[in-house]
Length: 137
Image 1 (spheres, rainbow, N blue to C red):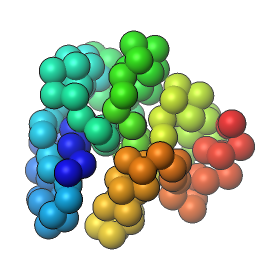
Image 2 (image 1 turned 60 degrees about the vertical axis):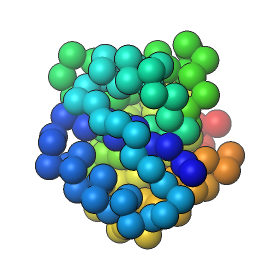
Image 3 (image 1 turned 30 degrees about the vertical axis):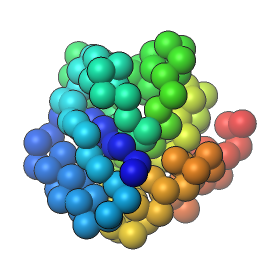
Image 4 (image 1 turned 90 degrees about the vertical axis):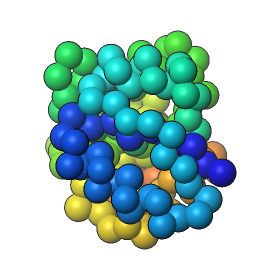
C-alpha cells in the first residue's frame, strides 16, 4: 500500500485528487494539509510514502516545505503538483529534492503512474517540464 499525503491550499483540489486516488487499490490517502507548515507537521506524524505538494500556498510554500522535509531527512518521496511550468520553479523543485514534477492538467492515469514510479525509486516529470527537471541534476 502506497501511503499518500495531499498538500494544497484549495479544498476542492485536495478532495478531487483524493477522489481520483481512491480508485487505485494500492494507494491510500492518509491525510491532507493546507500549506507547507501543516505538510511538515502531518508528514512527521503520518509518515507517508509519497507527498503530492502544491507550490503556491500561504504561510510556507511548497518549495520551501520540500526543502525543509528533505533537510530533515524525511523518507517521503515528494511530487510537486502545480500549474507552474517556468524553468526557475521546476529547477528549484529538483534542487530542493523533489522526486517528481507534474502539471495539474495531467490525467488520472499519469498521476497514479507517477505515484507508483516515485514510490519505486524513480523520478518523473510532465513532458512540458522534463527538460528543466532532469537538467537540474
